[in-house]
Amino acid sequence: MRKLTNLIPLLLIVAMLMVTIAPDCSAEEHASVVQFTVGKTAVTSNGTTVLMMPVPAVFDMGSKQLLLPVRSVANLLEWDLAWDAKTGSCTLTSGKSRVVAKVGSRTAMVGVRAVTMSAALLNARGTVVGPVDILRFMGASVQVVPDGRSCTATIASAQDTAGSGDSGSEHPDAVTRMSRSVTYATKKYTFEIIRIDLKGKGIRVVPVASPGGMNSGTPYTTFALGKPLAMINALPFDTTTHVMTGSLGGEGIYPQVKAGYAETMGIDDHGIPFYAEGRLEVRVDVTVDRKTISMTTYSINCTSWGGFTVYTNWYPKAIWVGSNQQLIVVDRDRIVQRVCGATFQPRLMKPGQYALYGYQAAVNHWTIDTITSLRNADSAHLHIFLGERDLSTGFFIQSAPVVLRAGQPVMGAKAYAYADSFRMAKSGPRSFLGIGGGRYLYFVSSSTSISLTTDNVGGALAQLKLFSDVISLDGGASTTLYYKGAYIYTPGRQLVTCLVVSQ
Image (cartoon, rainbow, N blue to C red; front, side, top):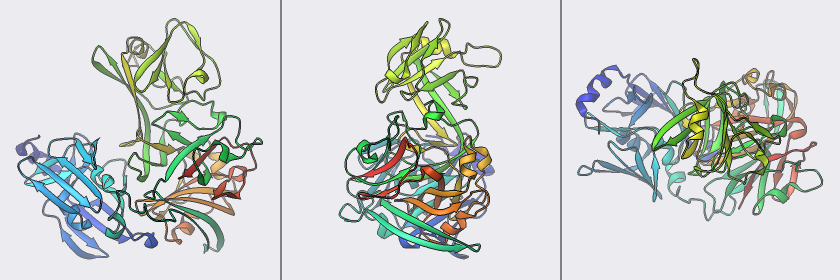
């Protein structure tokens, strides 16, 4: 535990926080958007002070993270909080959600599971402060800005979070369809929307893929496990099984995203949907003689960055591994195959396995000898980060332009920043993925001709008062929407990937 005296210099350089609460655009979902911004200690709602935090939040310079006053947040959101002075632990409860965390520890108990937080709880002048992970563990969808000094959280109301452990488990309509139309900036938009309650009993959202193309004479539902309730075109990456479901045009290199700023959406291992943005980073922790060596790459599709490449069994070509190079196949952190001076076929790997191909010895501009590290490795563990968020415990969608962020429209969507920007800029039908209320995932498709560079579709989506965040998926002939046995939109091309909801 960090001593209080060590916190004094830290507290002298931190800024105070102002928390503003405004009704979320998802009024139907009874949620609030909470925005933590450097400034004041007053908690306000529509300009009215509703709470004064006794101690400003701490920005930890070491971890570059915002630490929030736990009791103040609990009071604000009407969560029950119990403090055990003997053990230095606090327990947060709301309905069936329960989180236990201890000062000085990064391990929290979420229900009956032990989960590692991004930073430890600290005791700052008698006030316990903790990372924004606590908000996520309690069911909120949290977006942290790249510099880590502020965040926006979409939080369901007490009636929504009361059963967040499995609330909705008795609700017969966990997956529902609605049709909406709206006129924005003189243009009329029509939307077909499927809402998925991720707290619904047995609800699963999974990537589904077929390398041969799913509409080559075989129904898409053939490739889904269980009973499919809804489906939309998307390029998801399963980071728990390392199944890369990207297009074959990208040659299956995982996760098929180049260096740079990225925006994405996914579902974490707690079943909570999230929006995240930042710089993509893939890190491999290699254990050699009980010592850990971390290797990082920023450009996944290019063999000139980071000194190593990650492959899955989607990669269709053979790889020649030279005698001065090293490739290892990893299965649940265990190394099951080593290749050197031979040809390797990634497509022969079993599901869940991935390959690490090291080709760069340490020279002046590299700090890690990836060849020797992989050659001597005892085990390896893969992490995928986007900004400060670890994406390695669920799945996320291929980086796609954001059109609605924290309830605010984003015009232009920075389409030029994407390798497939021609698809994002073209005009035609389009699909979208949205979240709202801290528990709802939305599949959205529109037959309206939309170009992200000229149409402010985010403004139109905001008027529907359903979403906190929305990203654009592909459109045109890829547009796909399926609901309970029938296709609303059927793709006109050999689509290889979809996102499927089953029960």
